[in-house]
Image (cartoon, rainbow, N blue to C red):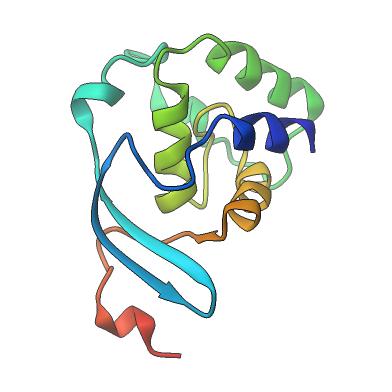
Length: 127
């Protein structure tokens, strides 16, 4: 839980790095649709890297892999912006140094839900 808590402590309670396009609360969870901030995201320490390395074909990350991503993202100037996007819109991959499992825990602490930015519509709110 260390990775979860460290990332959580550095996040605002609402998205601030990517513009909120839509927001809705359903059953106590906050759903956001964000406008991807390409200007900010282009300044990442990983720019120019093969994006496939952030989407390994594994279900569970090992400690070695988690440490690798922690080290790669540790001093990244846009780590919080990257994590914010990952929390709101990404179920897979590494975002802001966090694995999918870590983001599930952070979302729970924030009361956020993950949404697909391309299918964010009123149909998504029918339960």
